[in-house]
Image 1 (cartoon, helix red, strand yellow):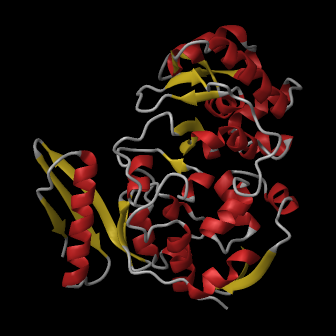
Image 2: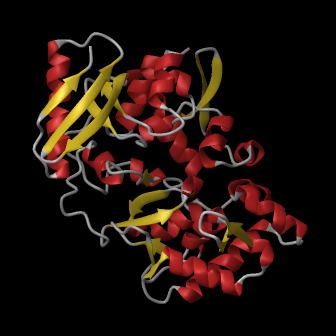
Length: 363
């Protein structure tokens, strides 16, 4: 039996959210990928883990469309193994990951993996120099047959389905140029996909190491993969623990870390921080009202993490030269906690290169 607070402490430690200083090399969340969504995306997630991101460049990191088609940041040195890691486990898995694009492919007798390979080959041939996403999509629509394409009413144009486009990019050795909007695709210099990801970058093992203990279904939900495929690749070196009446798995090597984990860190987590991506949301936030506030359908806030517990949400407020952080606590906060949260707001303001006007704690 393991209580939820111990689980959260374990994840804080595993994800290095209690570190004052860290480097890209030893920041473990880069093994699973750091989602780069929103203003306070991957860079803030790394800064919250003690990484100095002021001089972060494409020489050290690479941005790829990977898990769930979202852009994730990785160490550039790992790129060949990352692309091997994020490949669909099977043709059925590929079909699940590309959503509605699978139906016309099936009707045309085209296998999902073969379709991803075809798109990847075509994309690489098009992207010989850095190219804006819209231009790549437009050219793909002229060289791929109807089962790959859909009519987009908002654009009044025919495009490739979005998920095959995104998942084929890394498969074809293409990265996203940092800090470009709309996205610019370019070839990964010297790209060569590894034959296997290795234990450190294996997605199932990385999930268990960073977001465990977990069930196969939770890992499958994170990856958008079939549970059957995840179960078939479940590690042998796991132990079983019970969390809230549910039997879950943990890598055996992390048993002592789970038992001894403790933390006193305070952090402002971005809306898509890995800590919030765990698929056992009731473990993270047992109160359903608070959960709805943290994970609305649209417009997610960030989360306030204090001593291993999520204690509220936060949103940045920018109006001209004024920058404030609005905090919505879920419980009474001590003066010491408010001071720690304010220090993190100062850190966020410095990260954004603005001056903090104040922190607004809602009553």
